[in-house]
Length: 438
Image 1 (cartoon, one colour):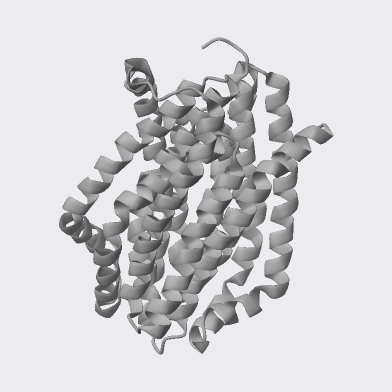
Image 2 (cartoon, rainbow, N blue to C red):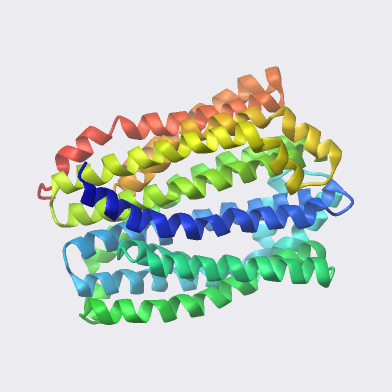
């Protein structure tokens, strides 16, 4: 692991980590403004409403992940026209898809809220959240494409400013709409939708100098080239299935928590913020593995690929250990900051140990996701996630009746471990393939 590789990893991971800090901060602000209202139903309403969008938008996560991997390989191969085409294809897919979501919002809501079990008052608030935030769908999906493209181009400074603008505007509007205007759950949703629209404008502005530096041009024939579209669609379908399985696991987690009552649902929502903080820090090294690994694959350089992976994994493990120690020491204080409801605080402390254990397990699937995304191995990621989801459901079936909410958290931890194992066994074959003709 040479010094230059460490530097390149941090040049990518550093800005991503800084920008990602704003994401859990946003979630924490959402939780805090709702958690300090006089009833846990508001926090539960946002948790359920946000889970619906997590399910929907993570399903379209291929616009970030697929765009990032394909762009990284084109960037490594120094194909400027193809780098441009990757962004254009993502927009061509994302914008019509978002318009379809808006048109179908009533049946989507009907299905979603029939699946997620919650009290009538929580469900009413969650629906209020949904029907406001859905109007931001076109901007949300376009932001996915822009972020993936920035990472694939190894321009994480642009990704940094894009994400900071998105989440910074969202946090400010959260406080204005909820604390000042008193709009409650609808205010949280409106803040998110408006912030997404602002971020698209800023993201396109940030993309202009990158396009000028790349050279090349948008070539309509290349954008619509049959073989490229086929590869993009195949990758996107695999990532879509993989992501739906992942979101289903977390949706099931939230639904099971709701079945234990509003207090447990709210406590789990608070503790999931711990996972969000950790995940967005580790994502910096996953993105470095994706961008540098994908670039090395495009350049057919196996040594550079292995160096990028080793350095990303090393620093990812260092950060994961740091988060575990932080949560063990400061976890109760973080819970108190996120909610002022004493019953929710006490319940959160009862299950805090799972948040301390999780980083040591989750670091491996997070990093492997980045590695396989950069390699555009969608089918491998899909199959690994399907197997992991089956293991998770089986664990929930046996452990939740035995241990209640502890069993639910244990199942989620095992799910993360299974994700790392099922991808890890495929890594040696991936390394051997780098530099070989497809």
